[in-house]
Length: 194
Image 1 (cartoon, rainbow, N blue to C red):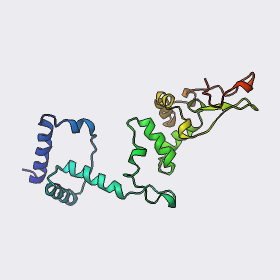
Image 2: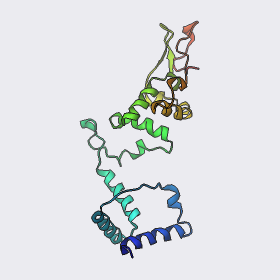
Image 3: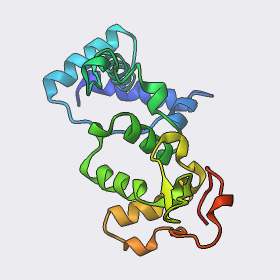
Image 4: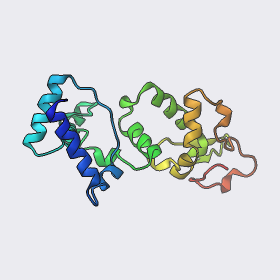
């Protein structure tokens, strides 16, 4: 026959999908499979009932609340920065932009794979504004968020990921003019290498 609480929760979820205009939340949400032990699930279902929510709505609310108490500190001066308080600085609809925001602000939070990816990005002069040195004629760039050409990065995002995953060779990454010949005195300070 089944657990009556679980059945009621499933029925409410189905009803939400069938309601006119009720699909809007599904369109902006992503599905995550979570394993809960039976006791925790039952208690979460009771809490959801108390708040007149579905179990999935309750879990989403609980996560949002918990983000306020998870701190991203990597130095004593940042002790008050929670995931929730940094949400606007870390979120972007574009995955490549989210990656860059995290890498610049919280490099200690990068996974091993993301560290490999970030190293490839930092070392690729094609993505960065800079200039050719008047002494060496070599392309020089400063790794700062303002110096990244986001359009170029988004365009080559898949290539950088393929190289970081070991699915492609570094030769697949974009190249740039590493050395320029000629009169260096007329070069601007904020060039992009082609």
